[in-house]
Picture 1 (tube, rainbow, N blue to C red):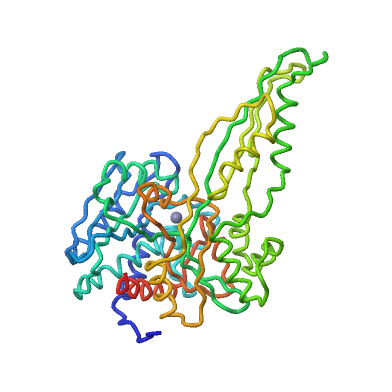
Picture 2 (picture 1 turned 90 degrees about the vertical axis):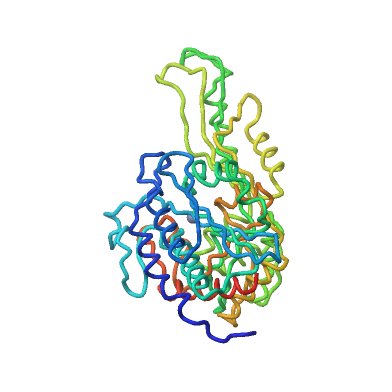
Length: 438
Ligand SMILES: [Zn+2]
């Protein structure tokens, strides 16, 4: 494995760029009430322009700005690589934090602030590597499409969603993509394992409605909407979904079992996931389907049986097991309950194989030779869902070498979000090698 040191210029800027991006508040409140992404998008476009990379800004609603730039490509290849990051962040409650969440402060070897891991870190790494390579004339053979999106934190409805419709020509040549959430290390039995996102669960936000016969609370009523709905909600909430392993999770658990000196079976899947320590909270949610009742509404007076009762359920389902999820859910609901979808996003899973996966592994192992690289299934969704609609094979690969004891997954949308300075620098060296190789 080639491990000659990388020149430091690719990592020179990354910390400053990450801090600058954090200082531009792009809080996404799930509406157009926030500051929007325009300022951050202009900042990114300026950084690209400074090194001679032209970009364009696109808005599907005012201030909700996306950046697209085409970079590299020497004409020998037509299959483009998409590199995508989002510019928005979830809001932060400053009073809960040890530092101002929009200060980009450096403390104890970390850059602190909202977006430090989700995902202004990766935006900064990409910009830092692209700028250094462009300055040095080290431009990749493969055409690369750089996209910085708005609104990922609210489902991309003002970002990647409309962007792939209105500017499809900018993505048409792309066959593969890298973005969040993956490439970070978790420590298993003292060995660092880099987790590459190769699949995402689907999401179904559902409203259940039971209708029955209204009437006086003192009388016999065998068609009570509240009773019927409550029984359905209880069945859904207490249902034990079986452990169901997709190809991605089978590959991951085999790698973990290898380190633990055992063999992976569905029976020990949960024990193997526990090897990840705190990261098991996220990874454990991908061993099975999930259906959680979250809201209930019915009635207006204690002695009046209402006509209607409604409940809301957050459902998360596995790629390849969508039909089973909805069939089981309908069965749990039983007769006389209508299901409406408030939001429904499909799951996806990309085979963990091929040249791009090899390039990801090589670039990580060149910087961390003792490590293990494996795919994983993410419990939530990202912009990858939108780009996947174009047939682009996407992977989560935002490389970070993390301290063994850091509860990294808790930092996503968490209080005191922060990223180690040396992890940012590590990530730029890995990405630089990756661009050599793709
Ligand atoms: Zn994110």
